[in-house]
Image (cartoon, rainbow over the protein chains, first blue to last red):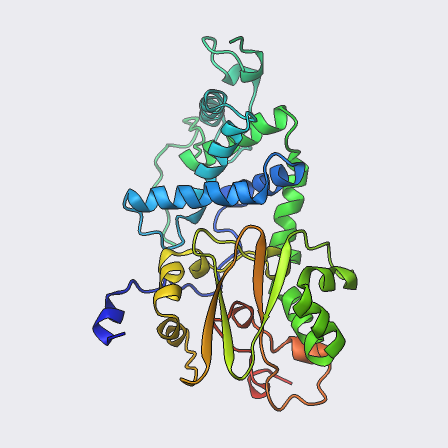
Amino acid sequence: MKKAQLNALPSLPRQGDEPVFAAPWQAQAFAMTVALYEKGLFTWSEWASRLAAEIKRAQAEGDPDLGDTYYHHWLAALERIVAEKGAAEPRALEQTREAWKRAAERTPHGRPIVLEAKDFSQRRHPPETESP
Amino acid sequence: MPAEPHLHAPGEGAGSELSPLELRVRALETVLSEKGYIVPEALDRIVEAFETKIGPHRGAKIVAKAWVDPEFKRRLVADAGDAINALGEFGPIGVHLLALENTPQRHNLVVCTLCSCYPWDLLGLPPFWYKSAPYRSRVVIDPRGLLEEFGLSLPSDVEIRVSDSTAETRLFVLPMRPQGTEGWSEEALARLVTRDSMIGTGLPLRPHEVSP
């Protein structure tokens, strides 16, 4: 292979001594996946194919995929597979996200954010009591 | 870091904020634990294990043992998962694990071209670059040039064999024992085994590169 061609290839992202997880949410997303796999919700092959699909989709949408967005793909794949397996419906997740948002807003800065029933708004019911 | 400007006057009752990513993760955790799929305390144990207990030092121990114990090496190359589980030193290796042995004629290099399948049980979580598209694609197109970028120039008569790790079969490299280490203990040898030497993007350290 000629030098010019080589130079046209993308360079490797390199970091020094990187932490295992760059942020707590990454650790949580990782641990949930391992726990669900250990519980038998999906096989590791099923998981790997969902993750590969998310990576491919993100690349098609313009993500240079240098490794820094890896856990974004991981999280998207996790949301997808738990929906497919019926473990967490997208609607329930959306309502719970909204509830966490309200919980954060009412919690003074620096205090632990705790989710309470009142954070699920009056118009919507908590996910598990919702009727079809 | 310079002091952040005060966006809220004290006593104004400023709330907290969670990023969209944090909201998504918290929502998953809430719904999945309400339905009994996960136990939050168990998640903490998983994270702690990967942050503190599981890492490339495990693989280094296995490689060093293979260097001093020919019978263990034979079993390791035949079925790495079985050989490691039989030691009983750390938790069971749950996946099919294969050791790829380097020889003077052949250098092995591991990649997962689709995502990032990696022998976590043995090496901890993969490094940043292993998960990147440039590594995954270049290792296939130009492995020799890629290794040079890692500072590893191999003689042209050494074959570079690239192997694809999958969800079912995880791979790691059994590097060659460095010269000048005759009579070294397993513990001393393990200090020469780097993470990259077990992925194939590096070689073990040489004796003069570690402090005695």
